[in-house]
Image (tube, rainbow, N blue to C red; front, side):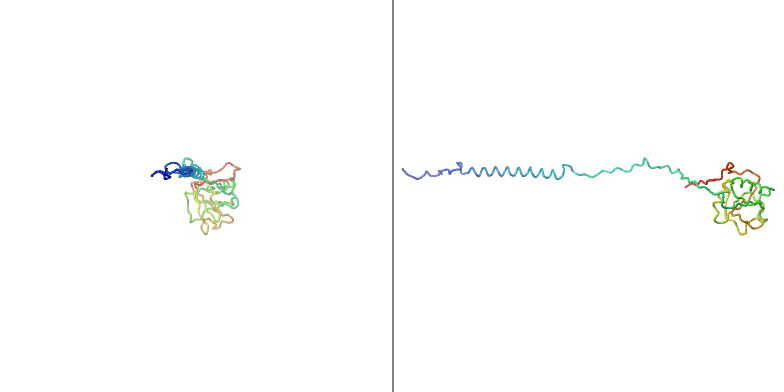
Length: 206
């Protein structure tokens, strides 16, 4: 007998499958595939935990509501200021031509809480007869003139001239002058308050 093996045939080594592929090689491929799969799953879980599973998007803001904003442009802010009736003296000059009307006006203003300089006087001859009553004031006593004007029904006020337009040419201690015209001579005070009420308020649109 011959010890030679037939041509083309090989004897399988231990741990090697017929055909030349070893068992260890096959196991290595399987283990590598499993490792790749596990790595993919682990990376996916890590990314999910990092993002918190929520995708941030743009935040939608709502426009400010105008339901609570007043749109009525006709609303007028009203402020009320108390005008003083003391702290100054009022002098009444008769420019109406009605005899005794200045004295009556002095008494009426005194009853409303004003400090009135007595006796009343006449307007200077240069003034002549006036149909409209005007309240004059010494600068710094605008509030007092406004209070007197309010009681007289809202007559005009303006700074007094120098010398004052009165018969004597001097106001004495008075700082507010009422030049009485025919419109109020011998009449009741249009804006008079009930006797005993000495406060007068001025309402202005703001």
